[in-house]
Image (cartoon, rainbow, N blue to C red; front, top):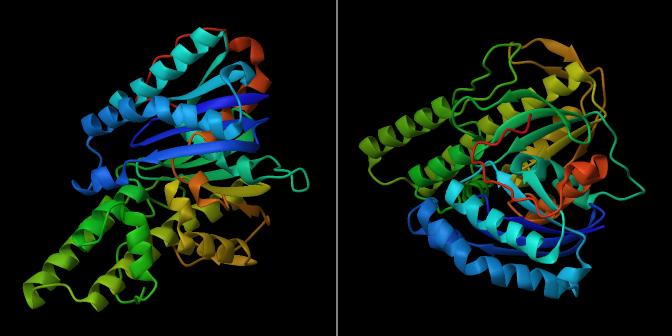
Length: 358
């Protein structure tokens, strides 16, 4: 089954063709990063106008790269939400029009579900994915721990109560005078920094909580930077590197702590990292280190034996971590396969910026 996927939830205009949920035939992404670099963040109206300009050329290029025409496509999938309303409307309108004009089923997809299914794009028949799976989605707008019992069966275990990790990376990057988006820039300078120089606070939210909070960490970095400015004026390169490394270590420690405790409690077969921050090298390393241990220490210092040895997965292709349309097409395939009769041909989807996965 060939599905044309469309993604415009934020600032990436993307289209892709995916076969049977796992084989990426084409994957086109028109990035707006240079545009939003000027303001240090996404301006919704600017992003929407750029989607209007790019959506048709991007879809045409995805079909051209795949060597296909619309008559060769079996269904159209699109991100329905969550995301920026003005951006979502462009993608949903384009997908609905294509589905109606070509008499194809329209499959609305939750953006977070798309990130979850990005790991299926790297899978193979020789190494099949097994349920139950614990998925940690980490991006600029989302932070969730999701127990995935089967396709389309999700249970929310925890989520961000304020700022997502990706947003914290962006804000800290601005404080340190680094570029946008913050994640790659912080990770780059952190490689030469001392992660133990600053003892930033780790918000664990209680021993039984799987929720996240990074607003206090952002404030701690802000206060540290202000103090350094007051003492020495401009931030030195070594200060920036050490601060970035300490911040990154704190975020990754909290994320992997929650991940490991949830995996141990629910005895999952696999643990998946998804979303833009899942591309972070230190996060991947720390997750592998902790999962590979026989014991781990919880945030109270108690030694706990791992009752399971889950397989760790994340997208090997970094483009599948960030917003893309291939992941949307993949999620659409598995949802359609499970309940094909629920997708009525020529159905008009409505953009929903607060769409829930659960």
